[in-house]
Image 1 (cartoon, helix red, strand yellow):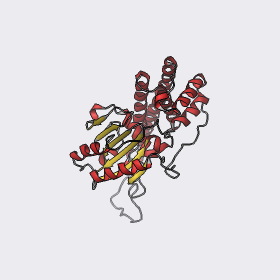
Image 2 (cartoon, helix red, strand yellow):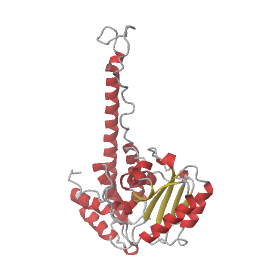
Image 3 (spheres, one colour):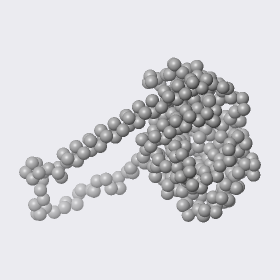
Image 4 (tube, one colour):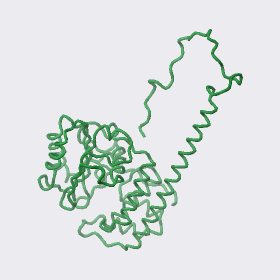
Length: 326
């Protein structure tokens, strides 16, 4: 794919867009109920997904929320939270609510697993789901969502996203993207426009390492992938309509596009693996050539037992900065 410049990300921690007006009362009540159930074990509540990326479409988009709680949160609280937030007990004005609760210990480390304590899907346009077992869900949804949360999560309560959510490693993200593409290639129950736009977002992540709003990703892909420009533009047009009036897109073209996306993800995964192997080989070489591994008489200084510490040397690598969370 041609390396055409992509548009800037729609939102960033330094310049967040206002929360959609249609969601503000709902999110206030959701937060109130979550605090009532989970305090004092609540760490953070984050808006993620289209709300965080600045591409929420009322009447079309879901509202995605990530909750981080102390692992000591009682199990019964998860059931109470699901009951308190279920539609229509709390009417969801969006197409639906997708809310995931993580323990703070799990959320703070990179992982390719689902790892949730509670996964709740509820709303007029979503199949109801209440899951307390991460083993019954495909991990890729959650890996991608945590990466988006790390980069763009909007804090509704508590600590900022980057202090509570670990960035999954790139290799794990590419595995998740490949599984996502496979799901959308085979999943005829997904809206066709959303299948295409998710593919566009995956392509842009492979190119840039950043998460773009779906429509911005699509505009960049339409320029670069000229064979699929008409399909991508039709998907954007359909996405701007309500779910019930989404356009029908040619199945063969959708599958062909997603095959192209899968190839790009595989290429990115291979490049990432090759980079990791090269770095590992370089580290092995540096270790082998380090003075501490040199033979006596080859230039390394051996201790004589008569030298005293001068007190002027500081230990290296201790107390100087912080390692970057991967």
